[in-house]
Length: 166
Image 1 (cartoon, helix red, strand yellow):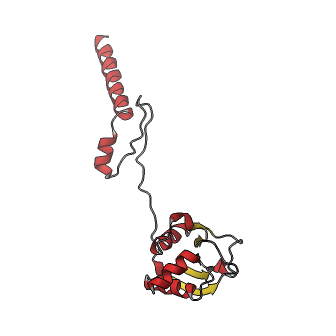
Image 2: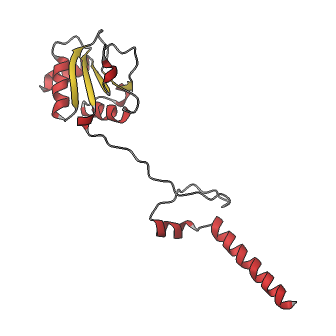
Image 3: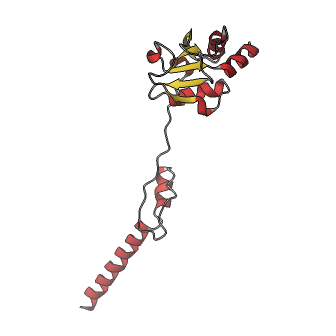
């Protein structure tokens, strides 16, 4: 009877130790064996077990694979061609330089679904603020833009800087 009681106590102690190890800091052995970094968001009570957070994966698309249409919405002659040349020098796949159907107050970089990252890169290349990047809608003052990944509408500030650069 004493032996059975001793085995039972040993079993309970081992189970308790295993449970405490699982809800506590078992991530260090997991980190060492898998090479992943665990999320730092565990609760103060140790009651929630969090899995390692995978690193975010962003696919970098080469500029040559992104189709870009440049539309002159500035009213400045040659502005779309100047911006087209600037983007082509940076290896963007510019499909054309056209006139917008209306003059715009400021430049815009519009993108199709899934192309926001590329649009932000183009805005950066053109030294435009992130606020100029927006989804492409049917309200854009450019006809035939739906087949391009990104549409750059050249406003007065971009027209002036592009013409001064070239």
